[in-house]
Amino acid sequence: MILLGSILLVLAVLLVVTYPILRPKPVPEAADDSGQRDLIARRDTLYSALAELQMDYEMGNLSPADHKQLEERYKEKAMSVLREMDIVAEEGDLDTAIERQVARLRRSRRGAPHKREEDAEQDIEQEVLRLRQRPATTRALVPCPHCGHEIAAAARFCPQCGVATSQKCPRCGVAVDAEARFCSQCGTSLKQEKS
Image (cartoon, rainbow, N blue to C red; front, side):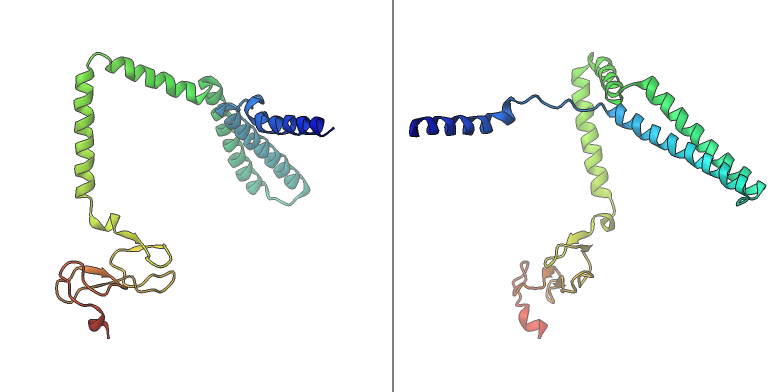
């Protein structure tokens, strides 16, 4: 009896462990299906809005001028959504279109592999140069040492938690951490200067 119970227990454990591995994978929905569904939902919403607008007009809640203006606006939006639906239907799957374009680019560049490597290196160098020449103000955000909130590097206090973020060494002018006792550049004692 104990042997039978042990065998059943081992089988149950094996089933639980192997089920996630052996179960069939769910088929992911295509990207264009969700996009198409979104467009259909937008279209239906606009159709409902047009019907509600007509009902409000017939009940006397809207003036003829307001009705005409709103009706034109909703119809214009509905036509835009219908055009988008046509484009999505013509293009099919967006991933397929992207893959076709990538394949086309690869075919066009196949003839000169060495040229491609040189171009890539040159593009990288140009990007590095552009980033180095970028003004310091665009990259001057640092995390607060106390709460982690992003603050300007020149800020003396964190606007989130109020903690002093840094100070400058009185001797060499290098920015140092507010909790530092000595300047990391010149070694000047900082605690004496603060008091």
